[in-house]
Image 1: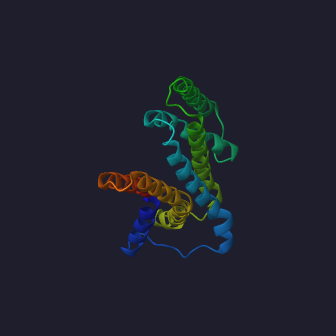
Image 2 (image 1 turned 30 degrees about the horizontal axis):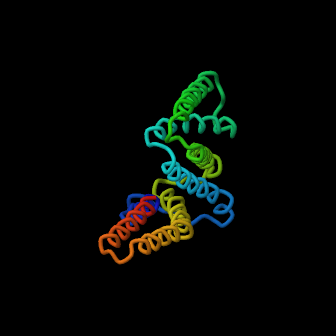
Image 3 (image 1 turned 120 degrees about the vertical axis):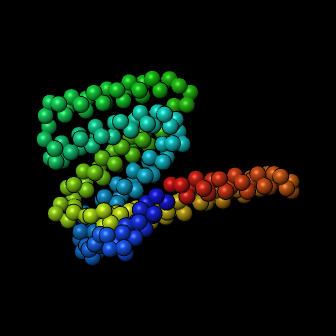
Length: 206
C-alpha cells in the first residue's frame, strides 16, 4: 500500500502544480531502462516483507546495515564509484560485523535460514535498484513526482497483483478452514472472522 500511496502522492504534487510530470517515455526506454528498476523495486519489497515472517525485527535491523555496503560494492562493479582503500575498508568492516551478527543469531531458536536468504535477496535487489537508477536512467533524470508515478505506480500494481494471485487465495483457504473447524459456535465463528480480517490487513500492509 505504501507504493500505491506514493504514486498517488506524486500525482497530487503534479495536480497542485508543485512539480511537472513529463510525458510517458517511449516504449524502448520503458522496457530496457525503466522496467528493470521497477522489477528490482518490486523484488525488494517482496523479499524484505517476506523476511519478517522468519527473522526477529531486531536481527533484521542489524542486517540492514549491510545494504549500503552492498550498494557501494555494486557501484564499484558498475563503474559508478571508483574503488579506493577507505571505501573497501568500510565495506569489509560492515561485512565483518554483519557476519558476526549472523553467527551469533544462528544459534538462537528463532533463526531460520530462509529468512536470512530472503533478506539478502532484498538487499541485493535494493542495491541493484539504486545502481540501476543511476546507470539506466542516464540523462533522463526523474524529479520526485515522476519517480513516484513512473516507478512507484508500476511497483504497487505488481505487488497488488502478486497478492491477489498468491496471498488472497491462501487467506480465503485459511478462513474457510477456520470456519469449518469452528462449527456452529458463534464465538468460534467470530474468532475465525477476526483471524481472516487480521490476515487481510497483513496483506494490505505490504
